[in-house]
Length: 525
Picture (cartoon, rainbow, N blue to C red):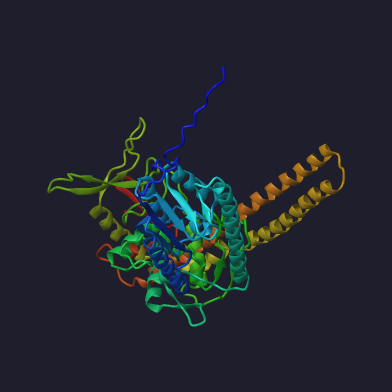
């Protein structure tokens, strides 16, 4: 028996679910974007907004929703494009039926972002129209064309990024230095574009270096600057310890400039990474006037290198942090507050590990007034011996801090390292060029690699020993300078003297408290 097939025609649009022939107006929005905030792009941005407003309002079958726009934003990803993200959010919430954009590259230069967003909108019944390419996303071939055009836009973005990177590296190679002057403390932009000293801000920079060399930590320095109302590089009232540390380690303050400290890993994500040798760097000596002398800058770097984290790591939350040691276990004393909610409130210092483990430390706690009184006594004993201390140091300093044997060994090790590294490279090249016995090659290569590691390890040890000796000498010289300036005995606690003279205090019991000064001298009080 013959089958009778009856066709039932569609009555609704399969994308929008509206009745076919419906006179319902489509709610239309437009998206505009310019990638920079330069003045020449400002007119383009305003023109796009004005054009789409008039274009949508000029259609009787369209209802104007809004023009969403992003100004000075790149199109490689959608994370920071607030206008774009708000438009997509409104579209998915059912407030928009059609989105009009000038071109695919204005919508997104990232193929994945572009297609993902289009598909999400399509699933919610929202169509997109790209004027330049004449692509409607509900059209059967729309996604294919969109994929091709998005890929071309992404490739164009990659090409632009590579050109910009090349130009930037050429500027570095030519020795052209640029810094974010609005957030760079101590320097302004000169007429030639180079750095010129801002004397008012330079005072703060010099103060930061001086406080650090006295023994204060970046955290403690940040607290001092905030207490004195000194504005941060960004003009804010608050300082972070990281900001202070970046100032202490920035070579530009000694007049030099290291270029390309970071680089962009990927042109799509614009993710930046610290340059650890992946791309070339350029070092300019004497590029601009220095705020800090090279000697003082190097002294700070040496002190920074000696501060290592660990169980008994140094802290400078307060004046006495990491300055008082337990004579039993060697741990630092920490502050504790007694009677915190009563009029008998009192801050005391005791061993941080006093109650750790089975055996408790027997060392006593100390209050701050006791520490200050004992410091005054110890310093006055030291001042009575001042002339003898200075004379003795001057007599032995050249012998005690003689670096010639270490520097000679360092030079020899560096030469040996260069020779062994060259032998390793020759070994690799020979194996690539000639069919060698692989067992013999591996044995030879392993021997050279082991020798290279051994030489590098010893070179690191010698370099560290040189750094420690230099830092120790500079610390003692600063100690003696502070001692020389103090002409009279002291009658009360002086925080600057505490930082400049004291290495640490060791507590054994109430009758045995020893002050170790920065020259190594120990005084029991």
